[in-house]
Length: 224
Image (cartoon, rainbow, N blue to C red; front, side, top):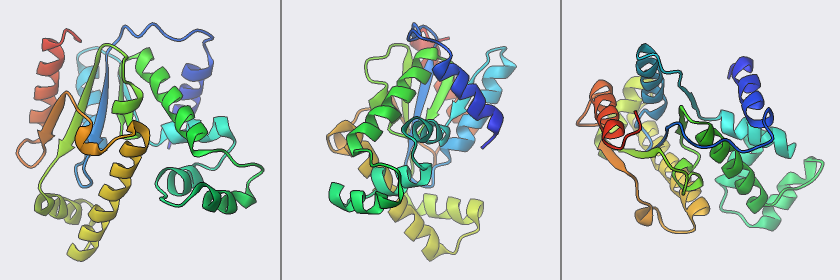
C-alpha cells in the first residue's frame, strides 16, 4: 500500500476534531470470493474522476489505520481476531508477544469508527470490511453486493491468479467462510439477513456494465 495513501487517511481521520457532515455520497462493496471488487472499485474511481469528481477507494488501508490506532499488527487483527473462530482466551495466548491484548469488540469498534468516518467524509468506495454494517444509518450511501456462480468464480481465479482448479476452489471456500464470518461478527446476524441496495451477478455483467448500473442507481437515489 502506498505510504501517501496512509498519510492521506491519517490526515482525513485525525485532521478534524468534529465528525464530518455526511453530505457527499459513498459506496460500500461486498463480494463473494472470486468477484473482483477491488478491480471494480479502481475502475469506478477512474470513471468518477473523468467526470471531474474526486473519489478514492479503501480496502486493507482500513485495517492499517485500525492497527495503528490500537498499536497492533494488522495481520494479527485480520487473521487472529477478525477471521478466527477461536475463543477470546485462545486469542489472549496468541497475543502474548504483543505489549497488550485488545478485545474483539474493541477491534471491531475501532474498524467501524474509521469506516464510518470515511463514509461521512464522502466520495469514497469502501471495499469489504463489513462496510454495509458499519455505515448503517449514514445517509447518501449505496451498498452493493457482488455475487456469481461458483463455477464462474473458479474460472475467474484461475485466470486472474493463475491458480490450479483445486487450489482456486479451496481459496474460494476459505475466502467465503472468512468473509461470511466477518459480516456475521459485525452484524450479529446471519449473512442471509443482511440486506444490500444492489446485488449484482458479475457472471452476467462486465465491469463497465456494472459501473453503468451503479451510476444509474446513484442518479435515481439523488447521489450524483
